[in-house]
Length: 245
Image 1: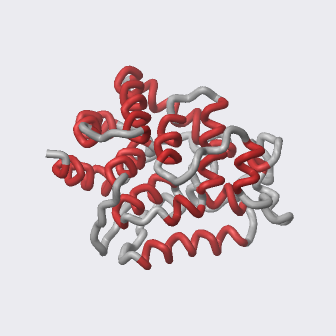
Image 2 (image 1 turned 180 degrees about the horizontal axis):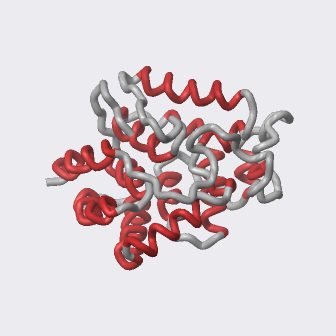
């Protein structure tokens, strides 16, 4: 993600949000180069979010580049139920989704930040986490809590180490996480409107590989090629690391 204007504000979990953002982007060579930096940024950080992040870093270091890249693509790029685009969980493939994406950009602008990434939509979870770290506001995460919890549950079901990252994020938010999909659906206060046919994760179906999943907007469909990590994540992490010294 590129944030051409505006400054940063640190919240109590700014380091954890920035680290989670980096870990949820495609694990390219630069990600593995950043692993020691991520370790240092989390040194001395207490609480469940930091513990979950360190467990994931253990896995990333043990897995190595090739294996982690394959696992990332398998986990996130072929199943809508493990979608990293938050508006999919609330709007599916409906007309309202475009309005929701505009709302994400407006939220960034309200804090003096401009989203200007050419390949990812503004609701991409790493972008939202990076924004949260920069602004000190967790409003977007709270607003999308049901989708985050459903994503966490989906990752737990497939037993992927990436679930640790969603556990870390959800642990920063107030109140306990729902234990199952029914509880997560209840958190959404009634589930999706009738026209939101793409919100299969709120029900009992898989929502994967069907015509009711995300539409053809850039950045929403399954990918077979590599993603690239956000340049600003790599630029900001040294600043966060410096705060720990």
